[in-house]
Length: 420
Ligand SMILES: Cc1cc2nc3c(=O)[nH]c(=O)nc-3n(C[C@H](O)[C@H](O)[C@H](O)COP(=O)(O)OP(=O)(O)OC[C@H]3O[C@@H](n4cnc5c(N)ncnc54)[C@H](O)[C@@H]3O)c2cc1C
Image 1 (cartoon, protein in one colour):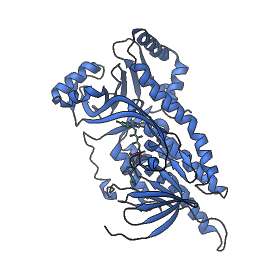
Image 2 (cartoon, rainbow, N blue to C red):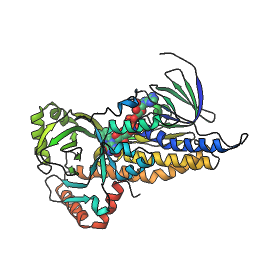
Image 3 (cartoon, rainbow, N blue to C red):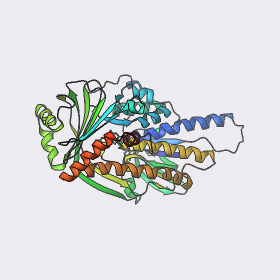
Image 4 (cartoon, protein in one colour):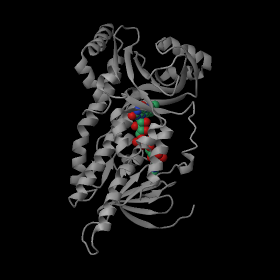
């Protein structure tokens, strides 16, 4: 690797070009273009600030733009549930039309608890929407975001890794493994908590290990899913089935730590049989299973998400249990709020990393984050308690939720990210 010692100065440096970092770069792209246009219109000698400059650093090499058209949906691709509210954000980022090409709509949701009568059903049409949400392969979301980024005036450092991050006057100094140095007025940690920068900066996090592991796989069912998603709670952990194309569904099956190895070791036919027993026939017969992946589950929340010249987004700020499908949706709202705080600050002559800019971002974020963390964590704890009386109460709650239209709709709107 050539070790140049180039240095650059930017207003915003984003560490990590995963789903969250790439979304933020897209969100800032429009602002850069607008500011460049205004700068072009202004007379020479104007004292106004130079157009926003943004850098993003990502170690994983990106697929080439022309590979987007060659994308082949794979039976094994991991996918995420994207709330309806996130679709609206993707529309604002000009990436929804690309995302929609591989998005499977969730038109109905069925939630119940194994062995109990209660169930609740949510329908998109009750809310006057085309879908409650969508399931999109993660790799496709990444490609759609990166294709948009390719068209924006952003400093791409890829493949490149940030090796060190040090506070300096007016911001942070980033040293890359390519030898480049970046001085940034605002640094956004979107490294998924993988690079250890939070710890190196002395930012503490609260950890709660769920003692559970999520097993993820794509399965094929015997009947068309009709846009139904299923969530089933059980004392040994929740499971979800999300609609993909035709008869394909994404399975998220939570296991207690010790139990997952045994399920992983099963042959495909044994696995399908075990799944059928655990899930029942509501989605039809399970016919085929793809590669199985496992993820140990924990709740990690950073105690600080802003400091002067620093903001933390996505998994680096909050890693949630995936059962409620909220992690990325919550992060995307954070992306939109940070971009909007930066836009307002700059319109008022303040910088992106200014403490006031970040305080206004944090003020918008904290209630939403707190609610979603409580909501996802509360679901796991409530359904994880194996107690008969509580089981009946939960079942009554689910039945009650089904009967109480307005309350259920409010809950659905919150889960869909269209109500805060
Ligand atoms: C099993 C499972 C299922 C899930 N399902 C859903 C769902 O259905 N819906 C939903 O909303 N959420 C879901 N989530 C949550 C969602 O996946 C995360 O919220 C999301 O992936 C977080 O993205 P991120 O960009 O913050 O982190 P990451 O995806 O981890 O990206 C971090 C990026 O930083 C880069 N990086 C690391 N170190 C450095 C460095 N030193 N310098 C520069 N870059 C660096 C990495 O290469 C990577 O690209 C699920 C999570 C799990 C575990």
